[in-house]
Length: 125
Image (cartoon, rainbow, N blue to C red; front, side):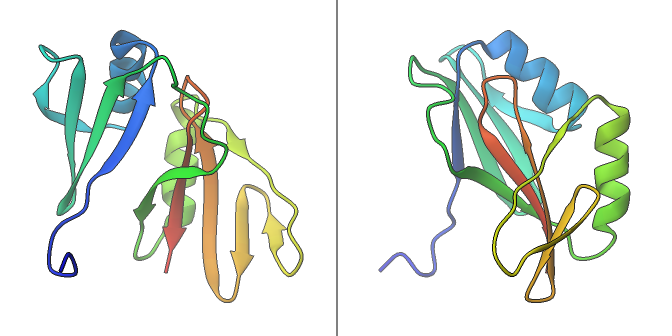
């Protein structure tokens, strides 16, 4: 039923102003709508990211959104670090870490948090 429908990542934040600084400034996303409704909409490739104000912002302890980087994830990590993004480091069985990149089953991944603690990821698959 939903297999041929687009899906949208949705992230709760405490402050739209702080979210704008992070998502537009640090991540370089372009806003395509929102704000008058307490939400921001961003176009990311062929998908969208909805960022909205919520009292429950940052309570998710798992990855909220992932950007698929086809190649050159290292360059994306370095560019984000230069904009002040700090990357998370996780120790999982069978996962090798080289700096900020984790490698598992041939897939490279890097995780970081937005100002509210939402976990975001980059994957090179």
